[in-house]
Amino acid sequence: MSLSLQRISIISALLLIAVSLCCGKLTCKEGHSGPTHESMQAVFDLKSFRPAVNLSNPTISNISFTLYAVLGVNEKTQILTTFLWLRQYWRHEFLVWDPDECDGVTRISLPAAQLWSPDIIVYEFVDDDVSQACPYVYVNHTGHIRWDRMLRLVSSCNLEIFSFPFDVQNCSFTFGSYMHTIRDVRVGPALTFEEMSGNSKRYLEASGEWELVDILGETSILKFGIDQWDIITIWVVIKRRPVLYVVNLLIPSSFLMLIDIMSFYLPPHSVDRASFKMTLILGYTVFLLIMNDLLPSTANGTPIIGIYFSVCLALMVISLLETVIITNVLHHSSMKSKEVPNWVRVVVLKHIANLICYKWPEDVQPPSEPQEDKPQSSNSNSESWNIQPAIETPATHPNTNEGAASMPELKQICQYLGDLRAHLISLQKENELTDQWCQVGYVLDFLLFRVYLLLISCYAMVIICMWCVWISQT
Image (cartoon, rainbow, N blue to C red):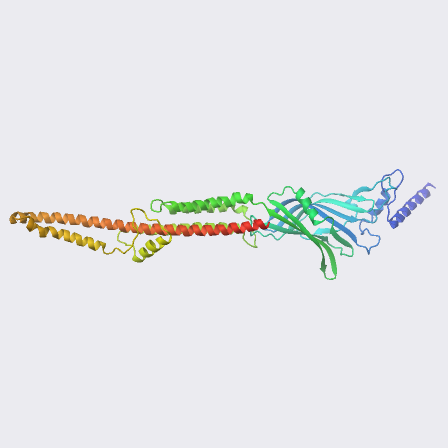
């Protein structure tokens, strides 16, 4: 008799559950808060099926997220790693009850693994989610479910690093159902994109070198053959904080370039400027090798800061070549028999010196006319000076015997004086040639320094203007 009563009670409970499911409501018992476990277990047994009384009606799923952190940006593999707080809503038509019948309970928490959930994925996902799982969902009496979970999103992103370190990246997250088409599941945003952006800027932490600029988005339909899917495309715009790279890369490089410019003020004839510049180039190369890890590298292109460093190194090499040229010109000053060609005197010492407003030293006069007849006039003077005593000797010495005796001595003295004068003239000529070659070297050094300074100024202005434009656009 007792066994039959138990069977009758079980059958009645099953009939009650079936009726409740058909009516779309869970049952409650007096003295119990919330729906009964038996009625919820019947719903759990249906987790493999979409919770719709009429399967022709799609299940509506709404999504919103808050960007909590930007964990990393890998330019080489084109991967963005972020941490999201994801919130997902949908309606379970079998989880409905009357709060008046269930002791005023309007919301309960249930295990997410026991309920059907929309298969919403991020299409750009390229790695497994290793974030901590949230095993429970909230269900209210109307059947609406809210599932809050944390998501470590490793997604692909087309990273543009040309303007590094003032670059702005625009990465997209596409949310949508993997399997269910719009006939089964409709996907839409739970909040406006402005609200998502505001919440993300409010809670964004551990962002490191990245700053959130804005979050934009749109809803659309993905068509593939005869099937259609609802998708939500969200663009996350982030900007790099450039202070680290300006302090560690740009400022030291600018200091080294400034030292290279100031090295032109070293006297080229008394200081080994070439050795100094070679040491500077070696130091700059070591600096680039040390700082190479801070520069991003991709197969798509080279950042402009890499081009900047390469051009700076090329300018240092050009500066070294200029020093080699000046050293070669000054080397001619030690070659005593080599005169300055006339065209060099005209082009360099006259026209180029006037063009660059070269300031001549006080003891050096700018060349006006070629002075090729100077040595000949000196020689003629010496010859006349040597002949003159022989002519005047008879007039000054009336005694012939004494004059004849003193003539060899006077001739010898005159010869010594002539040799001394010729030696002094040759020394003067050598000094003049040395001074002329030195002045050619100084004028060329002055010219090449101005050209080098002009190149660096134009290059720096172009780089600064480009970076200022990028900064203003962000």
